Image 1 (tube, rainbow, N blue to C red):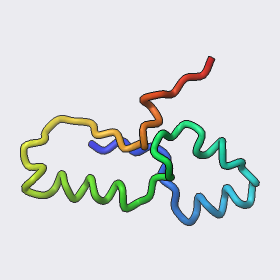
Image 2 (tube, rainbow, N blue to C red):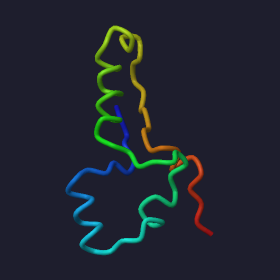
Image 3 (spheres, rainbow, N blue to C red):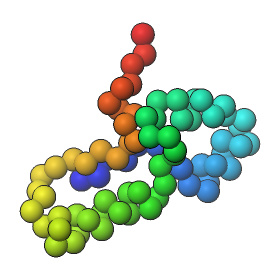
Length: 74
């Protein structure tokens, strides 16, 4: 299973622009210095469906740019 974090697409960009959502709110918790894209998730799916991923079973692969690894809110 793939557990994606914040994946930004065209519809999400339009919503954020319309609502004037600050960049820090969208990206503040992501350690990788860029937002996630649909291709990031597609690449993981392609790996899991390929011969290289044939021995991976029963796993949850989190693709969130490191967000959950350092999430802390006092």
